[in-house]
Length: 420
Image (tube, rainbow, N blue to C red):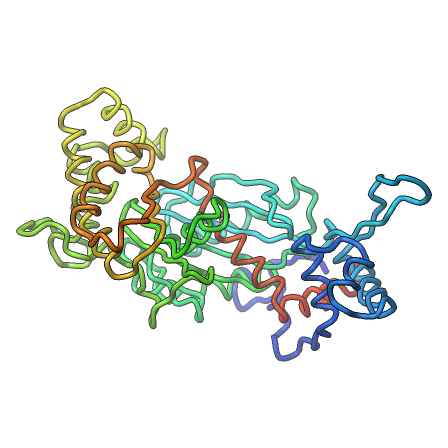
């Protein structure tokens, strides 16, 4: 199938929508068991699969043959043999497909593609501001994803899932942002539906703090429940439960903690219309505003981050005081969340992460003082991993869970039939 933007004139993203779930074939339990074992690495040969599943070797052979024939698995010689013919090893085929993810933030977007083992193949930053509106941002993100696919030699027809992270409340079911602040034009915009049609694959939209939390939980193998606080232009929280799932509220507003009052008596106006919200007094943007540091310049979209880091490194008293005051306010909110959720791990992320020592010490002091000993005795408080890809990694994890669900496997079989 050839990619045509004009294939569906009704909207500018037109390809064709993915095959509806109701039209997907049923997946035999045995076939799914075979694929699960290979994907997890628990079994890499037909004999191992037969032992673990209890299926007859002939049945295993049929399922393996079906998966190999559809380009989902491949069987290769391992090259390790004591004598005789080298054993054959089953692995995911590079032709099985790719997932695409994007972390859209206020000052830019990061996009990445990964294979179905979860290995990130490429990533890049797209200099497009979220305030440019969804049409401009999604077009720029889509074009860069297609560029990465081409550069990596990946077939755009075999994108299996697209996941987009947004810095605001998200209705996951509808695939759109819901009344976000500082995101003109995004409220109710059908981002998931449009991207799904563009790539002819299922697409999901989620909150960036949720995906950051999922990425941190999967990468560091941290103890769960894991609570992640993203401190950027605003402030959001994501919680990964003990079962490894993202906690979701009733309407997509879970984790929008930036509007919790943090400083008593503050008259600082927040974007929500209230005063004293932690977003307004302690976010990265609020700290920059207090120090009269421009968040971005024409030459440097990360100007504010860099200048604040330099001032802190030089022990500038105003900068140090502003950061300490922000850490205290963030700590008050973090302590409240620790009391409510009793997480095992608390992770701080976002641009202030570059100032981890100053931020961590302030937040820790408040949390240990304000939360009860039972909630903090085994609590680990840390910062996100230094490469800043946790949100992208969380998107990859979420995408692969869908790809290897029952519906996802059925879609793989349908999409890989007759495409060569």
